[in-house]
View 1 (cartoon, one colour):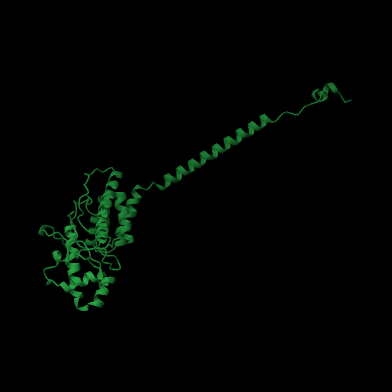
View 2 (cartoon, helix red, strand yellow; view 1 turned 180 degrees about the horizontal axis):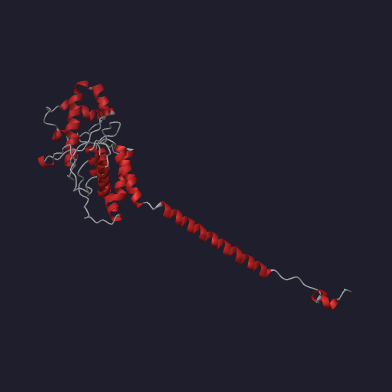
Amino acid sequence: MTRGGFDRMDVSTSVADDHKFRVLARRHPELYAPAFAGYVGGLLATCWREGERLTLEESWPPLLAWDPAAVAALVEVGLVDAETRIPELAFEKWYGSAAERRRLGRERQLRADQKRGHTRPVVSPGPPSSSDSQTDSTGSTDRPSVGTDASPAQVPTLAPTLAPRGEADPEGEPEAEAVTWLAQHGCYIKPGDGFHRHLVMAVERHGIAGVLEMFERLAAAGTVQGDIKGFVFKAKDLLDAQTRPNGSDVAKATREAEAERTSQRRIKATKDAIEALKATPEPTKTFAEMLPPSVLGDGR
């Protein structure tokens, strides 16, 4: 059943180093090129575009002549199953993970908007619109790639589709517009690095509109293009400072609280001393000690 696919495909630069492709190259060097092109450019792209596990025959790229020997080699090394489909476990694991990441991104942005008192329409969780990745850093092809929609109107370009300025794209990451703004000013952020994490925190705390406004102010103030640290860290610090309590007010409140605690300790100590005196019995006096000296005279 078709569940709707992704609109772009991300392929790891190390996909060719996958163990199964290396085995295929050693066993059948003459078949490596058509097998690789048929798998990556045909099967992965088409399956993720359509959102279902197709066969190699259904997705074979038209630029290549159909090659039964290459198909057999892909089956032999385990890149596809006996029906020449992507193994079901791998397909479900990575397709589902990509959809889940998009869902969590939408929920994260919704929580951030609610925290800031903003309202936005609830976006029903439909099919994901773009992928995260289809291979890991080791090039494993157990992470299938994401395809593009066959409709010409949805063919992806190098420029990402953005929501209206100041509004996060509910189908993508909330910080996507900020990443694009930085790229247009010579600052390129790699997903997951320190700059990206600080940018995500800034967007969650202050909203995409606040972050973009601060970027513009920094640019107008003379921050040079390409100074990624100057934009990301400075913008976050300035935005945080706007919501951070005033230092002198905090110090004054601390002093007042300490003075109140000191006063209460002194009052308690005085009360305890009074109670102790009340509880101490007076010493018993003899009759002679109770008489005044004038009565006793000098012959006492």
